[in-house]
Every structure is written in C-alpha cells, then in structure tokens.
Image (tube, rainbow, N blue to C red):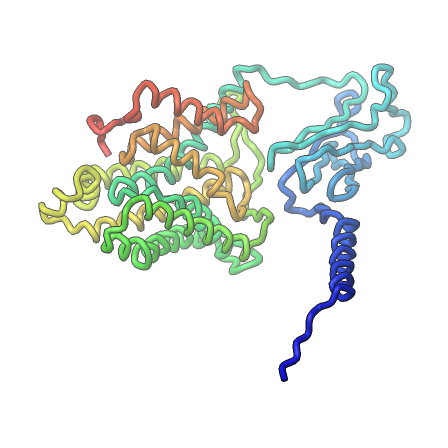
Length: 437
C-alpha cells in the first residue's frame, strides 16, 4: 500500500502567512542606505573667508544620504567631504566656531549659515562657499576659461587617441568591433595600481608603469591566442564576434569589480598642485608629463605604421586582407602583433586616464568606450590616423562644451557633433580614398 502526504489547507495557510510576514519585515527594513566613505564618487567642497582672509578651524556639517559628516576648515579656509550619492545635502556652518566678532548676519538671507547643494558630477567637487564681509571675489574671464578648456581638451584627446588608434587597428585588420576595448583600458590602470600601489607590490612608478604596459600587451596576445584566432579560423561572422566581445567586456568588467571593489583607487602622485604655464593656463606636472608621453608614443607609432615592414603589412591587410595574404604576408602573425600593440596602447591610455580623472575605478574604461567608437567613426573606419584626429576633436569638444551646457551633457555634445559631421561626410574625416594610416 502506498501512502501519500498532501499539504492541507491549514498548512498552506501557515506557509502563506510566513511568506507575507517575511515580505512585511523586508518592507519595514526598507532599502539599504549608502554610507559615507573616503572613496565616495561625489564631492562637496568650499572655503570660509572673512573680508578676503581665510578662517581656520570653522566646523562644517554636511548632512544627507550616508549620514552627517563633520569637518573643519584648514589653514587656507578650505574644506571638503565625499558623499555616496547625487542627492540633496544640507551644508551647515557652526557659527559658534567663528572667531570672536565675526558673525553671519545677512539681511537678505534668512538662514545664512545653512545651504542646500546637490552634487551631480562624479569627482568634480560641488562648491559651497561662505564669504563673510566684503571680501574680494575672484572671477575668471571667458577667454581664460576657454583657453584652459582647450588645453585640457587636447590632453584628454591625446589620451583618448592612444586607445582609439588601437581600436581602429583591430577593426581594420579583423573587422571586429571590440566592445571589450574599454576593459583593456581599465586593465592597464589596474595593473599599474597592483604593481605600483603601496597596498600591493609597492614598486617604483618607473618600474610599475612600463611593467603595466608590457603586461597589457601580453593580455592582448593572450586574448588573441585563446579567443580571437580560433574564432577567425572557424570563419565566425563579424556579428557573432561583436557579441562575443560584449560578453567578454561584461565578464572582465565584473572581475575588476570583484578584485578592486566598487570604490576609487589612486595612483601615486594623482593630485599634485597646479602650476602656471602660459597666461591663464594652469596644469599639473602630471598633466604635462602625460601629454609629453602621449605625443612621443603617437609619433613613434606613426613612424612604425608608415615605414616599418610590419606597419606597411598592417596597412595592406586593412586595405585588402585577401590580396595581402596572396602577396605573401603572414596575416595571422600581423593580426597578432596588432592585438599586442592595441592592448599596450590601451593600457597606456588607461594609466594616463587614471591620472586625468583622477582615480581608478572598475568601469572607467566603459565610461569612455562610446567616445572611442565616436573617434574611430569620426576619423574614418579602419584608419589609425583618422582615429587620432577624431579623438582630438572629441576631446576638445567634450571639455569646451561644459562652458555652455551642463557638465552631465558634455559627452552627448561630442556625439551630436559626430552625427552632424557624418551627415556631411559619411566616410569620416579620412575616408578610404584619403587614408594614410
């Protein structure tokens, strides 16, 4: 005889009640609130002055998501805190900590010691200043701001160009739109962090940065040996290869998050003082060194592409792979070299971008991936020099557009210019007829 056990209605009612009770407890708990930490992506900063003179030791309280944070102004009157979300925060100055005889009486402001602020641009401090008395207010002329932004745009464009030319080389020789190229940018920065970060190996930057670039090149070689070459030999279509690159991008990106976390890490020397260059233009020594390195590498790359046997073979494969193979060029070997060069350039771009932001984050390469594709498309698909020209244009537009539109839309402005230019010249600035790289 076989016996069966069936859940009766009373038992079912009890199970349902337990489920509803659990859901109710979760509803009461509510969402987990973000807490403030040193690596928070949003910043609020400011200074306190009385008649143009900095006031030290004034207590500032910043209250909002993540809890209340209390800081004091430094000898220069400045203060800053990191906050976890782009939300509204209340900034309060403790009037009891002001020097004797200094007050915040302001007939035009009912609550002069309290201000509301919403940071909305990661890593760009939102200013909240308390100017007391008739202090001198500094203002920067539009021409000076434009000159500064142009120089920053060239710096950003050079960094973007290093990554874009590698992306263009890969597309020109293999036809792959590599969506994992952003992760190759992040990889270089992460390797520099692991080799040169004091919390890890702690090697000198003179060792860490070249080693990170070398490892990035080996990473490109590994990807070609393990993934791309076998797929090429199986004649997998370009659409399928693109889908593979998207999946690879997601896998590598979340591996970065697993190993370095969701915060922001800094390379040594990420925040030096700015120095006067020419007129209103001020840059850090790191910016100057980054621009020098980028220019030197781009010149060396151009000479290699134009005059070396491998460079000429690369351009031949980009123009016509079948004809290049028939003429005796080892297409597989050249493509492998292209992957190594592209990955090494992307790794260098990631290191320079980590200093430009500043900071290393698990998805930093993804943030500029669309701009890299825009640079390649704007310059002309498959042309390395076109990608460089497109990157410089994109970099300048991104930086200067923030003078006219909200900073959150600056990337969109570059894409708008891309659309306009492609409507006029669909093949890009350096089309196939004019291709020199």
